[in-house]
Each structure stands twice: as structure tokens, then as C-alpha cells.
Length: 158
Image 1 (cartoon, rainbow, N blue to C red):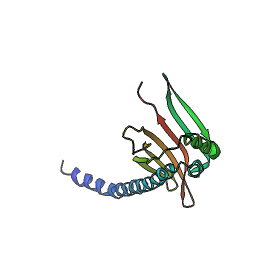
Image 2: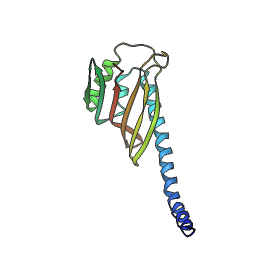
Image 3: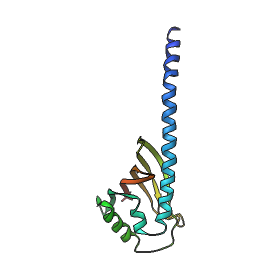
């Protein structure tokens, strides 16, 4: 039995650097995710559809999954122009809002590809405002992290 202890210790020691690097990447991913989603929420609060669309890649896809009566269906908006039209319609009923993104997970798949999961509070000024789960894939272009795909889920219980 005792001869296995050095082997286990050696194995753990050899894995430790990769675990640390993984933690560092997770920390970096989370910092980036919090930064870009905080900026996005502040822009959302301006109710400016063009400014919101500027966060998206030219070929982005925005998917809005929602309950429609008994069914759950998905509405797709492809490309920056359709994304802007989606936000323009969303912002038609203007009101003072203060939104907030809570990042629950972030992962760098590559140095220029980031996934983010979280919940979007549409208006923290109203305690009953919807808390909407989301999933984003972002790509780094220059110094910007643009949204390549976004899935928004509005599926309250029946």
C-alpha cells in the first residue's frame, strides 16, 4: 500500500499546474463576462436599438425562446439588422429601467471564443420584473467581444 503514496503524490503534483491554469482561465472568462454583460445592461437601459445591435457580430443569431400559450416556440433574428429591428420593437414602450446581468458561468473555449450563461433582470426598479435566463457565445474581434449567438429564454410556468 505504501508504495502507491509517492505515485499518487507525484500524479497530484503533475496535475496541479494544469488545474491552476484552468482556474486562471475561468477567472479571466468570468472577468470578461461580467465586464461585457455589465456594459450591455447599461446600454440596454438607454433603450437604443442601434447601440444594442452594435454588440452583435454581422452574422449573429438571436434566438428568443418563449411560451406561447401551451407551446414553447423559438423566434430567430439573423444578422445585425434583424437584431436591431428586434430591439427597436422591444423598446417601443419606453420607460425608465435599470437592468442587471447575473453571470452564472463563463468559459473561454479559445482565446477569442467565450461562452456566458446567466440571468437578465429586465428592471431592478420593479421587484416583480422578469428574470430571464440567457446563453451567449462571443467572439473577440480586435478589442471587442461581439455576440455571435444569443439565446434568451422566457418560459414562465403554465
